[in-house]
Image (cartoon, helix red, strand yellow):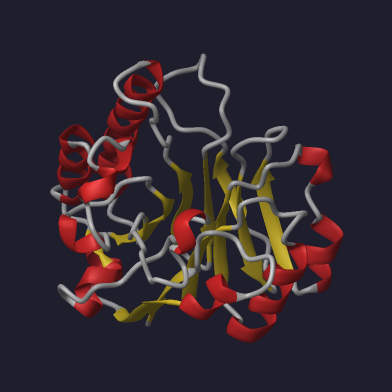
Amino acid sequence: MKIATFNINGINLRLAQLLQWLAEAAPDVVCLQELKCTDSAFPEAAILKAGYGAIWRGQNAYNGVAILAKDAQPIEVRRELPGDPSDKQSRYIEAAVNGVLIASIYLPNGNPQPGPKFDYKLAWFERLIRHARSVYEAGVPVVLAGDYNVVPTDADIYSPQSWLDNALLQPESRAAFRRLIGQGWTDALRARHGRERIYTFWDYKRNRWARNAGLRIDHVLLSVDTAARLVDSNVDTAVRGREGASDHAPVWVTIR
């Protein structure tokens, strides 16, 4: 079973690129972030024609998450992260696919920091940590995949120097990610690639793609029983270099 996460950065703007990658990579499940469209504008017909069932939660111009399943319909479990009924941002969706509980996560960016956006990021992270513990302890296979907007360590960025004030590298952000991992989750890319320099995001500015000035902020976390069945994990880096590409590349895992 191949499970991927891809911050598409505008699903309608980059639909052709998404469909090309789906045809090439043939993932069984895809978690998408940054749809940047309303629910009614989601390109369901094109996704279905490509062979994927889908659930999604959109938001006009911002955010938005989805889960696609090849030759299947994801069984929706929840459409929001528990813990704050007043939070209307579309950042979390959860579904069951072929016996695996899968979440598509778009954690807040948090910039500029300090300030209310960073406070929201940390509060959202706390809610995720609480919910992750509950699904981890349920004893079912779980995959938490998405754009976490966290660079876990300095080994996950080409150079931290120009990013030291960025919310993605703040000690509080990194500590929250460590506490999440500390529940027992396996970081699939690190499990397969050790300390190798591996990136998932290259900003459009300052020629960062051409310079391979990347960051690792898209993560796939596996529960203990899922991690025991991990076969491989990698980044489809070449997708980032295509015409009209998202600033993220797809990250995937295969499990037995």
